[in-house]
Length: 50
Image 1 (tube, rainbow, N blue to C red):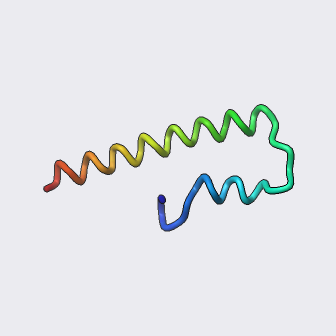
Image 2: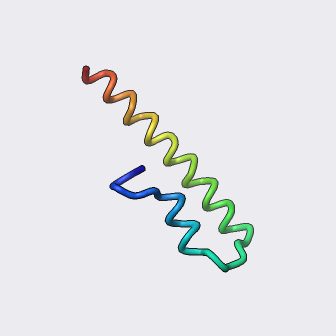
């Protein structure tokens, strides 16, 4: 969860009923990886701060 909402869930819900194209799927994969890395870095920073 980033900024109080689930980013991937919202992105998919916004496209409900639409056929996702190749570019949509690639975009989803790219930002999913970026979010995962952001979450990992945030966790690392919290550990270092303690």
